Length: 486
Image (cartoon, rainbow, N blue to C red; front, side):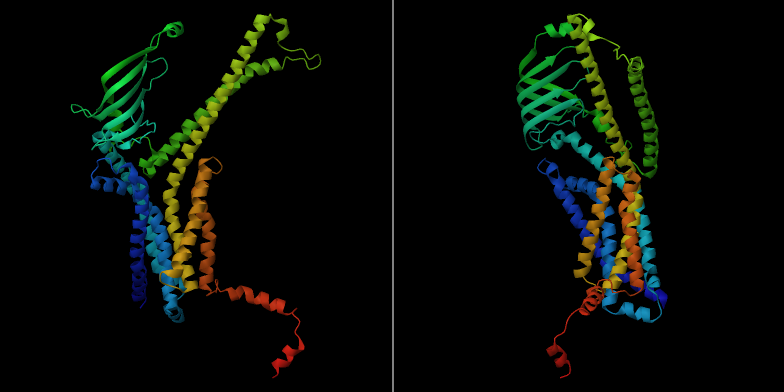
């Protein structure tokens, strides 16, 4: 008897589950594709390549779709049982609500475990796969990532701005600005051209061949030259009708291979993320100790002289007025330069620490997210099944409204906590679990109310005692009293 009932409950749940999951996945993936479509459409790419790339990039929406599907499906299933009086019949037969939900709870546990392994194994693979496809596209169509009128830094060691891109393969360029980045003391070059072409070199795909027309190349040959030599050096530029320039992109292409996930934490599984977190902890501790030591050494020298100041006679360590006039300016300028240098060093250290903390928070949140989303499925099931048993409304109307409200509130809390962690205002481990911690008491409360057959959403339960209390103080006139006995 119970086995047949368990089978019936599971079938009733899985029917709308697969339908809801398909619809929500389609909505989320289309919404994601719509945001990313402009980067690839009209760039000479085949439609199936764009579809495959968007699929691998957008498959991570499953982590949002599955919890929402469980929430909506459980409300619809249990609400349908209540609406058709099947739930009342089960309870009248002596079967408790806990026993009714047991087969569905076991199924949701399996889904939660599956979602964890999906986030741990499938999502890193999908990100690496998307990266591989993207760099294969970049190898054949290097201008696919270029936006008109925007400075681009995707090509290693170069900054480029192109005002117009055209051609069947987006290879024709107009109003081209190219700046070659270089380390301090190295030669640099800036090129401005009216037109040009950019395509992979036919002999070697590790190079891009940039052919520019009607432009000027400005060069700064400063390598191994002293400061005085640089000051006397005249501006050097060359006008050209045609200029061929080869850009090495081998490092960029090699970083997109499957066996090389790069330095991004999104390409790592749980073990890799755990190892990365441990490495960041060690590196950051060493970095913070170095910063502390440097600050102490810089200030210790000055603090020893401050101690020599006689607080009674208030004699200074250094009297500027006793110096020559020309020396006073030198001393003041030197002091201002030292203060400015210290301020710049402190600001640099501050920004560096903030960036390190953001990276550490992102990696921790990404690691904890696989666990927290799996637990979210269980919490959403407890909330959804309990509310369905209380509301006793199946179908599409009321369950959809309740699910959307709960989903929006939950993920606003979730993303707000993650943003607080990335800004350094909240511990990342707490931020990843904050929404679950807040939602868990409500899930337990709803389960208790559903088990007690409480009319949680019946307004008369809350307002009738208030109306009854205030009715005691209401004065009744004689006509009303007389009408009672007629």
